[in-house]
Length: 314
Ligand SMILES: NC(=O)c1ccc[n+]([C@@H]2O[C@H](COP(=O)([O-])OP(=O)(O)OC[C@H]3O[C@@H](n4cnc5c(N)ncnc54)[C@H](OP(=O)(O)O)[C@@H]3O)[C@@H](O)[C@H]2O)c1
Image 1 (tube, rainbow, N blue to C red):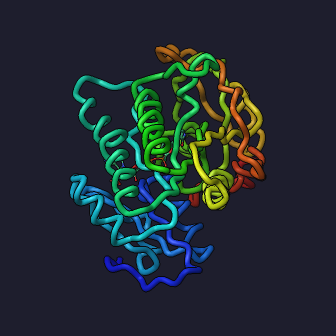
Image 2: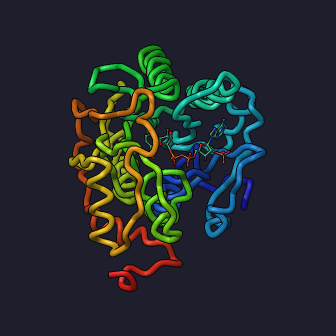
C-alpha cells in the first residue's frame, strides 16, 4: 500500500476514511475507489489490513501514532475534501477493563480527528452514530455506554460546528448486513447455523430489528458527502433505516423461506439482554434523496456465503 500522497488537481475528490478495516468502512472504501475518489485511510499498528488487500495499490495508508500532533500531520498529508469517520469500538455491554479502550476509540481518537481537520482547514465530516442513542424511541437515552460515547462525540462536534465552522452530517445506523460480513451479527449468525446445523440458543425473539443492506448503507455515506458540499454550516443528523421493522423471530422465518435452510433455534434458550431494544427509534429525519433499494429477500440471497448454495436446500 502506498504511503505517499498522490498529486491532486482541483477536480479530484479526496476522502480520508477512519474505520476502513471494518465491515462498513471497507465496503465504503471499495465504492469510493470505484467512483474515482482518491482514498486515504487511517490505521493503527494492530489493524488487520487483509480485507483491503485487493485495493492495496489504490489507497493511501496513514499510521496514526495515537497523538494529536500525529493526527494533525496525517490530515495535513492527506489534504482531504471530506472525512468519513466510521472508526469505533462497539461493545454491547462493557466491563470495567473496557473503559480506556472505549474512550480512546470513540472519544479521544474522534476528537483528535476533528481538531486535526480544523488545524488543516478541512471542514466536511460525515460522522457515524447509532440508533442505540435512542432507547425506548426517546430523544436521548443510550442503550449502553458505547451509545453514550457516540452521543458524547456528537456533543463535542457541536463545539467544532459552532466555534470552528465544521460542517457535519451524522448518519445514525441501525443493523447492517451483507456479503463477507465477519462480525458477530444476526444474519451472519444465521448463515453459520445454517451451515453447521448446530442449535442456536436465542432470547424469546420478540425484539424488533431494522436491518439495512451494506450497499444501501454505503450509498448513504456517499450521498451525505455530496450534500455536505452544499451545506454551508451546522450538523445535520439522519437515520439510515430500512423503513421496516421485523421481530427477530420473523427474520428467522424469512431467512428459512428465502434460503431454504432450516435453522435449529432454541427460543428462550437465553434471556433478553439487559436493556434489549424491543422498540426501534423512528423519530429520525431521512437523508434527502436516499432510500434503501435492496429488500431483505434480495439482500439475503446476495449475502450467501461462498460455501453454501441456496438451490441445494430448497
Ligand atoms: N450494526 C451496525 O453495523 C452499526 C450500527 C450502528 C452504528 N454503527 C457504526 O458504524 C461504524 C462502522 O461499524 P462496523 O460494524 O463496520 O465496524 P467494525 O467492523 O467493528 O470496525 C471498526 C473499525 O473501527 C476501527 N477502530 C476502532 N478503534 C480505533 C482506534 N482507536 N483507532 C483507529 N481505528 C479504530 C477498527 O480498526 P482496527 O482494524 O484498527 O481495529 C475498524 O476499522 C461504527 O462507527 C459503528 O459504531 C454500526
